Each structure stands twice: as C-alpha cells, then as structure tokens.
Amino acid sequence: MPEYDALIVGAGFAGLYALHKLRGLGFSCRVIEAGTGVGGTWFWNRYPGARCDVESFSYSYSFSEEIEQEWTWSHRYAMQPEILVYANFVADKLDLRRDISFGTRVTAAAYDEKRHNWRIATDAAGELRARYLVMATGCLSVPKVPDLPGLGNFRGEVIHTADWPREGCELAGKRVGIIGTGSSGVQAIPIIAREAGHLTVFQRTPNFSIPAWNGPLPEDQRKAMKGEYRNLRSKARNSYAGDYADEYYLTIMDMTAEQREAAFELRWREGGFNYQYAFRDMMDDPQANELAADFVRRKIRAIVSHPATAAALCPKDHPIGSKRLCVDTGYYETFNRPNVTLVDVKADPITGFTADQLTTRTHSYALDTLVLATGFDAMTGALTAFDIRGRAGRTLKDTWQDGAGAYLGIAVAGFPNLFVITGPGSPSVLANVILAIEQHVEWLSDLLLYARSHHITEIEADSTAQDDWMSDVRASADRTLYTHANSWYLGANVPGKPRVFMPYVNGFSIYEAMCKAIAADGYRGFHLLRQTEEAA
Ligand code: NA7
Image (cartoon, rainbow, N blue to C red):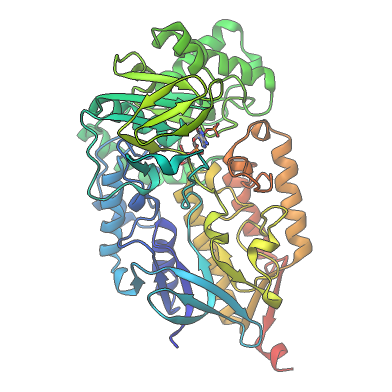
C-alpha cells in the first residue's frame, strides 16, 4: 500500500499550495481530487456570470513574486474561466500534476492509533497510508439541492450552479426558472436573462447586493498594481479581511446625516465589499447597520422601475452584511427587462412540479430549464460527506453532531494528524479566502517541520483548548450582528444542521497573530507525542 507523509484531499487553491509547500520541504505528498482538473470551486462552478467578488489582485496567490509578475489579470474581478486558467497556470508552473490523482474520491479515512497514521480508501486509487491527512476540501464545495416538492415530475433540465455542465448549457430562447438569490443567483441572473426567452426568478429571501463596477483593467493600472504588489500584500496581511481595501476608518454613528449619505454614496461607487469594510460600526451597532441597509434599499428602489418588484427585492429580515454581501453586475437593473419575472416564494410558496411547470400556491410557471442556485452545505459538508474516523473509530460527523469546531479552526481533538485548511473556527470565508488558505498552509508547514525535527509522530488538539477556542469564536460572533441572520455561516440553510456560527469573526490579522503566538509557545494547546515517549 503506498505510504506518504501527507495525503491532501482536494486540488483547489488550498490543495495546490499545500502540495507545493509540503513537497518543497521534503515531505512525500499525494493529492486526491474528484474533478478531472485543478481549481476546486472554480473547476465546478461554471455557471454563466461566475466570478470572484474579491478583487483579483487580492484574490490570487501571494507566496510567489514570480507568479505575481508573470500572470496578468484582465479585469478588476476575474471571471471563472480566467481564474481556472490561472489555477492551471500555477499547477503547470510548479509542476504539481505529477502528484495529483484526478477523477478520484476519498471514500473513507481511519486513524491507526498504533502506527500514528491514516489509512485512506479511495474509489479509483486503492488504499493509501499517510502520516498526515490534510483536508483541503473547500468551504463551499458540497452543493445543496433543496427538497422541492415533486421535483421528480419535472421533465426539463435541472442544473445546479455549482455543477454546471462543462460543455455549457443551451438557454437561448428558453423558458428558464432560477431558484436562489445568493451570490450565485445574483451573478447568474443578469447573464441568463440576456440569453433566455423568459427568466422567472423564484426568490425566497432578498439579499443585499453592491455593484462590482467590474471592467477590464487598463494596462497602466495593471502595471501600477504589479509594481505595488508587495505593499498591497502586506496591507492585506495586516488587515481584518485579508484584503488591501481601506478598512474601518469611518464610524457611521459619528457622522452627520449629510456626511453619512456622502460616505455611503462613495462606497457604493467604489463597489463591492468596500461598502462593508469602510465602516467600523456596521456589524456591531444595529442602528448604524440599519442606516447602511436603508441606503441600499433606496438604491434598489431608484434602480427598479416597478415599485412592487423593487419592494420585493429589498431585504428586510436581516442586517446588511450578516449574510455575505453579493457583488453584482446589473442585478437590480435586470428586473426592468420585459423578459424577467420575480416571484416571491415566501409569500407564494412552491407547491410542486408537473412535467413542464413549477407551481406555487396561486400560480403555475411553464419552464424548459430549472437552475438551482441554492447554495452549499458550507464549511463542513465535504468533511462529513464520508466517514473520517479518529480515535476509537469515532466519526467526525458524530463528533460534530452538536456543532462543528476545531482548535484554531485547523485541528480537531480526537483526530490526531488530521488538519483542515480554513476549517470551522478560522477566519476562512470571512476573509479573502486565498490569503486565509496561504496562512493555514504556511502555519501547518511550520508545525510539520517542527514535528519532523523533534521526532514527533502524533499531533493532536487538546479538547479543552479546542472548547475554549470555539467558545471564544461563538462569543465573539454573538457580540456582532453576524448571528442575526439565517445564514450558511451558521449552518441555517441546511435542515437539521446544528446552528453554530463557524467562522472566526475577530479578523484575519488578529487570528494570524494568535496562531504565531501559539506556535512560539511550543504549539500550546496541542499534544505532541515524541517517538521516544511512544517507545517507552
Ligand atoms: P447561498 O448564498 O446559500 O444562496 C442560496 C440561495 O438559494 C438563497 O437565496 C436561498 O434562499 C435559496 N434557497 C435555498 N433553498 C431554497 C428553497 N428550498 N426554496 C427557495 N429558495 C431556496 O448560496 P450561493 O451559491 O449563492 O452563494 C454561496 C457563497 O458562494 C457566497 O456567499 C459566496 O461566498 C460564494 P434563503 O436565503 O435560504 O431563503
């Protein structure tokens, strides 16, 4: 049975960097990837309009100046095909493919308490052993198909945005329905509307969306950004969100009404997450948040011509930012098109399907194609999709039955030598996730080097340290408005999933400083078993 130092699951941005980093340090590695290519989320999410919502100069690897300088981003926010080409460019440049098994799924993993390593079963590469199991499976990688009544009756095509056919999908002139108005829906709707004969948007909860003002980056701007890269990266590394945007320099409640209006307008014009990053009290003070939310609602009413449609598009049931902001290109404007209908399925719920119709309590809608932009079993889905068995054969799924948690969001008590890149309890999805990935991979590499040089064969999070860490994660979130929404941050979008706020809200730079301090303190909160102790 092949035996490696590290078995890495997933060849998205986390898996690619983990392979490069660990291999470079002399660890033998194998990556197992279900897709037939690299890119992870960018391999699967090929829906029309898919693109990043963190600016590309930030949403890209920072570890290699050579890659930074050789690669050129075409747009402020790159589209999915370009990001996928980038992932392939990196894989080729670093010669990563030779250590990746594509088209292969891990089906089970069990910790061998005697040998201090993992036994891993796959569907196409047999069984493998590895001292370390590195889960680089992504936070948004298991699509969620909701339990829609009678969906099986529908004879048209049903496509999830996160499982979009590689060969594309012919929508021209068709009657298309889309369920879901999170980031995926908000990105896809304007593009599908241009192609489809008619598009019906089935919306349960409206989200706040800020314009991207996306566009090609002029040559001089690209050059200037490349020249500034080191400064931008260092600014991102020292920031709350792992991004180089200017952050938290305005307090909404300290401004006069005129100053506030001007500040909101300016951030709206800057676009994207600048609208959230600029204001230090937006996620803490309900009054401040409501003022910021009201500005966006006024924008929606100004853009959307039909008052009833505008009213239905205005979010009312959650603070702005408590569900991840959407960043759009022409989203609200799309509802002024004659071939687009908005249906509020909270007011008029979906009751069933016929061969060619979706029916609600009061209407029926003829459809050729149904697009599901219904999100993901976020942050834990890929970690509980198959049995990962730690000490005494206990599964991770059982261990997390009352809520997911990991020490520093990277290691789980009872699961020695298992590491989760951007796991629950780390900034992950609240930060620029590529930087969050880099920080985790680098910190983990240091830990594994330390283990190698100290003859440590087993690394395990202490359960008390983990409980304390997760209590702090939850208490910190409870002090903010993040917990005031039924969001996927809380697992609220998956029926039966325990409601626990999973990301670390205190910011990327604070988190990284804590990780460094814990390492400097001899990896406080970890049990490190040395070979000599083992022999004794
Ligand atoms: P999201 O943000 O989880 O959005 C999913 C959407 O699907 C949301 O509008 C849901 O409404 C809707 N949904 C889910 N189930 C149903 C049913 N049964 N009926 C009607 N509507 C439903 O997923 P995305 O893919 O858009 O984005 C995820 C992240 O990926 C995003 O934040 C970025 O970080 C990238 P609900 O709000 O639950 O009422």
